[in-house]
Image (cartoon, rainbow, N blue to C red; front, side, top):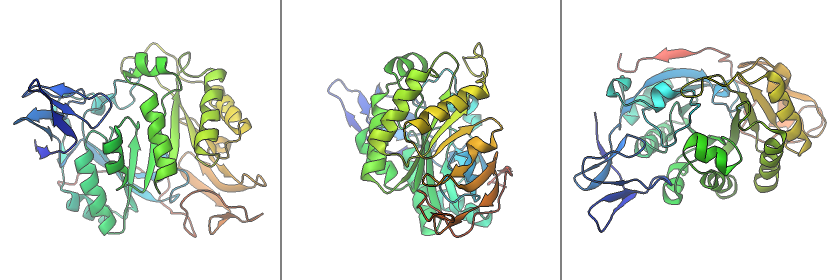
Length: 355
């Protein structure tokens, strides 16, 4: 286990130290760990205990993050560590994010070695995912910098539950982010995620209006909890009004997991309904995920309706973009595009960097 110094903390008058990375503001005595499990008080300071360690590496299609408007078709080297600063009862990566076993961190890599591996594997970017890069901020930043030095992009897959100072530091080193907006009520965040809604909305507004980071949003729809027409209407109206109509919105299907095995799978019709509500509220790019729905996963021109990027799961088909514009009418499609899409397809390639 590798410890690494951090800067987002301060000492309290009662002898404890407060972690300032996220809104939890964990106040720790010597030897205690924060809610996330990976930031701890050692020597009167907050240290990161998982620097340079990963729960696994895998080359994925960038669309799996999901990012549909950021270098489509290209491979991304995905990795995470352990722990999380939220407590979502429906966590789909609970074996990693809720891990209290250091054996979960089966692989190790310095930032430079990780970036070199990404180049060797033909990736165009590296994604911090599986658990939230907010809690391993120092490692994520160093990896992102090593990647940028080699011409790679850095991608954060995050719940956006981060304090202002740490938020600015983390995203100054990122090129793209998918933010998991888990619902649109404080009650849902408090009861189901052990967190609060407002910090996530603040992160989204900060990213869209104060950075150059490309942003997409994902909302996992859970039957009976956050999938009502009223909540989806409120969420998508907020996105359109506060972020703008060009921010892609993904609605994905829930499957029973972790501490929420009593809920049914999300019906495909719920995702289609959510997509219709979002489009009616003026959002230009709305997608469905975790279901087979080529129509709901493809990109269309907001001006003339032409098919721009055809998708079947993570496999790309027809491509009708020319310099990021619709080949039919010339309207710009928001995103980060190259002349031609990548050809990685739907492959998933697990990697052991130590080997």
